[in-house]
Image (tube, rainbow, N blue to C red; front, side, top):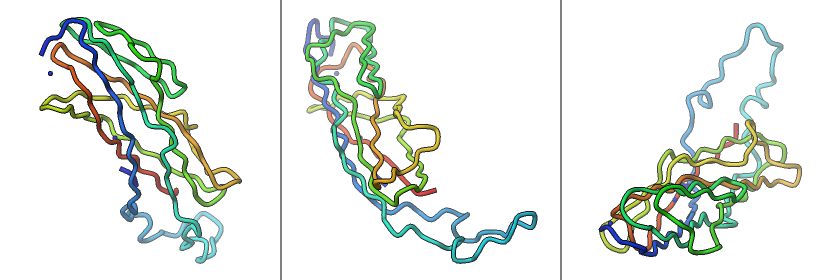
Length: 184
């Protein structure tokens, strides 16, 4: 489990989201505690039911989610939508001032062939040097519907999200993203 303000005309807003990932064991799920036998299915050997992965999950941040520098052009609001494939769309009162807007990427290491579940938060709050904050929501990944660790024991995925700014946002903002990965 891993757990990532005043009106200013033409003020540069520097946003760099640090996708600091820490690994903590996932809580046990109810279905792990007791597996009810299926009366309609063929018998499954007990050793397979109770089998735990031989390889623990490990996460490594390959690239931090980084919105780089944004010029906020007055009052109102702006949306910077960054897709997992690196395409950034800006709308509202903002213009990109840097060329380093990048999606985040995480490498999962684990047992080859095992299915995993990856959960990202709904909203991430970024805090400025002062008392201001902004948020990223709608985090998305390039993972397939049912992600699986590859034959080489790795699974790399990228993620992006929507950065929302209002008329009172300026400064450099940072935050962390909690990413939960668990074997299925």
